[in-house]
Length: 77
Image (tube, rainbow, N blue to C red; front, side):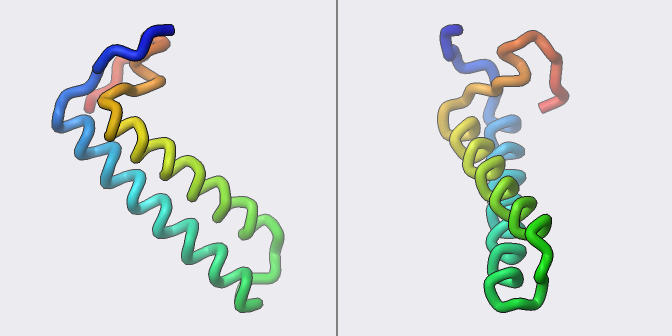
């Protein structure tokens, strides 16, 4: 699958903001787990997955390419 630019500047900004919020939230969850405020490994897993997903969204914003649009699903941004 070739990665051609398939989102405009509005979509890039949206993915960047969502990515930054997701990474920030994931860092908060992992930090709370590390300081024993949250003792559930579920919180740790959600935090790590949030960080990974956020980094992917930031990468999509940087590349101008959306995987969901690439497989044929129309997104509003």
